[in-house]
Image 1 (cartoon, helix red, strand yellow):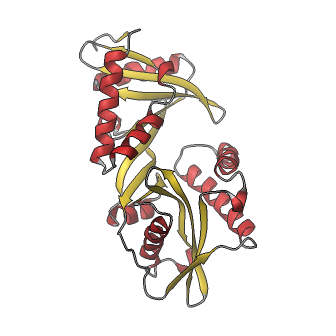
Image 2 (cartoon, rainbow, N blue to C red; image 1 turned 45 degrees about the vertical axis):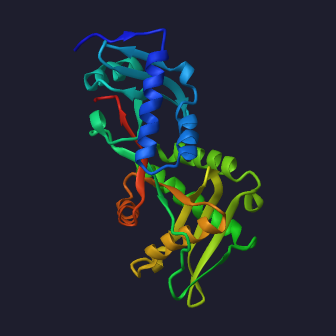
Image 3 (tube, one colour; image 1 turned 90 degrees about the horizontal axis):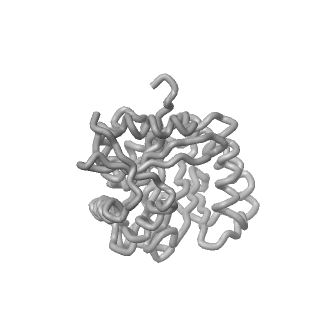
Length: 286
């Protein structure tokens, strides 16, 4: 393998990296304001990344504490053979897991298991709810029970994706819900909905309007297990479109965990493009 050399002057790499990331977001259908906002998130902490080159391409890496563990992050890799160098660099600094965020296909990381995806789709200008489906706001009295169910489901999704242990997943759940819902039911910008069919609540939705420019983020669009297999999955998608327009946005974004093949298939068939994909692998024994 050609030798990778760490560089101090990162200007040439950074310009190329930002251009490629922006192109990936544009290709996924993002507006220019949204693509720029996503780029700002993608380069957070970039000054602390280590960049290396073999003269033909780049690798950018970092080691950080994440959920109580030392984790390596490969932020960029344009030389496939440099993956071995990047993994070794992370391992030498105590990382036992390496993660990547991809915006244009798996490439050199096809053997890294998928842990999660961010997907998005422009919604219809005048979305309609399916016949027989009613939507209302979740009440303050319903909120505590709903929250407990959401937290338990979130932990289960993280564990199923193979991202964290059950204990780590519970700790992450506590942090994330406190961060996203600091005022609980009254957190500004967040909406909680109940879907009803024939007077029975068959599912719920939780969204954040204005999450990014023109974007409503669907934290949860769930049909209860006892009502699945009846076509309500599409109804949940219709709910997402409807509430996105109600909040004044044009694009809906959502996350799906790796291992949830049913949800991935639903979002794929509903036209939600993969915006970002998160993959990781354990280094021990790899």
